[in-house]
Image 1 (cartoon, helix red, strand yellow):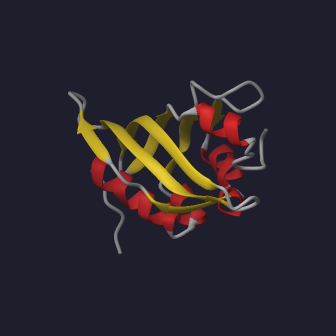
Image 2: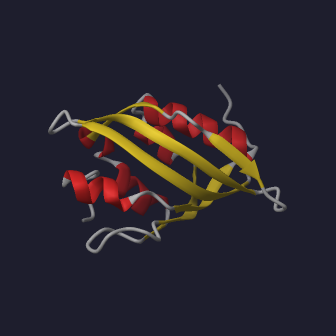
Length: 141
């Protein structure tokens, strides 16, 4: 299957890869110099990942901590920049270590160039991890 190149289609494809727990393929959607930012990350959590390798290291153990089941309420908004979208969504599933339900709201500003993520600002809800005590990645924290 070919990888979609429009920002919205690439984003939808990336969510399918996360649900399939195919982190390697998900990381493969990133440009080598792509940047992922978490402006609302709580103290002690990474706020900026520079480059595909940093994103890969951050995401490597994600499925060991979160078992994602669905992304309901997905809304993708196009912007005046054809390479940038704004995404509103929820991620639901369970925390693997405790079997506690996982329900996170997100807003992301995503830029795609040449069919790869180049910028991903993830405005996830830090209250979810603070309330549950979860370590979502077990990596760079």
